[in-house]
Length: 216
Image 1 (spheres, helix red, strand yellow):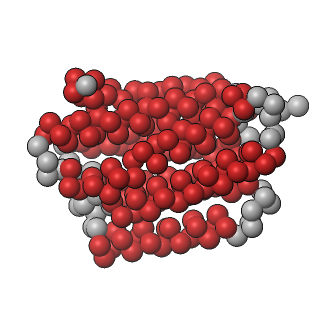
Image 2: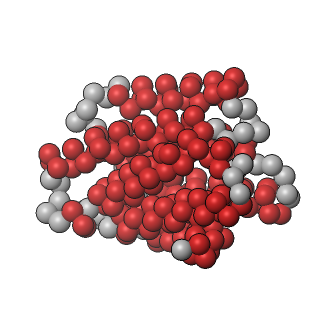
């Protein structure tokens, strides 16, 4: 398994091209809440590009990118759920979570984990909130049953991808600073597993975007 995780660590980011490519092909159909999924994919691509340029080209520390990216990532994901939920849940629920998370993430970067450290507290909180939103999403889907075949329903695939990634990585986010102090072999395998989970998330999101409905 070790060679596989090392391979994923080096090549896992390329799986992002799947969701990016499908988002570009289906761009004109990404309306409403699916538009925020396309924005999430674009944000992920930009984040990976900046990380690559700073780490491998310029060889400068880039943890500060993660602090900003975490805030943007959660808010884009939350907007997807907010528009999908519509009036099924109280309209203030998701905006309240967005505002509260943003404030706490900024305070964490200022007072607890500065820009030279991984923002594990904010990432862990983000994971908990996305897990909660994903479970609420499943409840809405199962209550309304908007499609006869869930495997052709975009939200099912997208929500599953997000839940898989954030639920699997919550303990990883909590311990990411500690992993940096572990032997390289352990650290590389952990990051390789993270890359695998990210690849699966984008694969699921890509499938969901592929099933985006054509406007009638």
